[in-house]
Image (cartoon, rainbow, N blue to C red; front, top):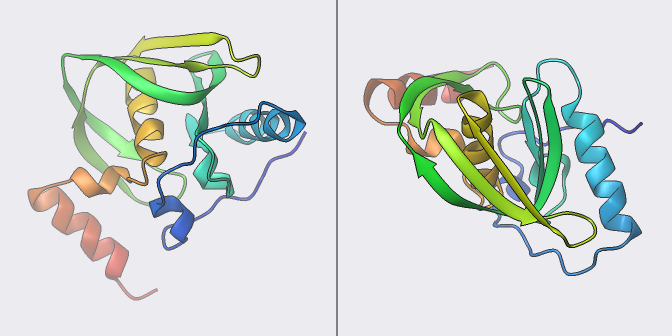
Amino acid sequence: MTVRPLRLLGDPVLRTPCEPVVRFDDALARLVTDLLDTVAEPGRAGLAAHQIGSGLAACSYNVDGQRGYVTHPRIVELRDSIEGPEACLSLPGISATRTRADYAVVEGVDLGQEKVVVAGSGELARCLQHETDHLRGKLYIDDLTGDERRRVMRHLTAPA
């Protein structure tokens, strides 16, 4: 079992769009295992490969007993919307209220290059959106507006 250290805000990999997976080999299998082991830690819902230092298009999730991974994830359906709390392992100690779709469907492939479809509502939908954003080099705080954005930005720029 390998729990990899997390990359934190300021690490350029978090702002770099992911590279497509072109080799489905042992190295990718190790990355997926590390993603699954790292997201299995208590209090973790999702993890993008960026967050453990890889620039490949892969993420894992662990929400309400549903645990898995997807390479090349892309959102194919979003429905409804809900406002709720969101946080990120790469921005420890910070959370914000933001709106996301309440239902999401992500398609991608597994290690055998077989199609994978992950669908969910509530926290799983939020997780799927959050992780696919990561793989585009986007953080959840980027879409905050108004008072919530000002509050988070004050927290991020406050002296340590």
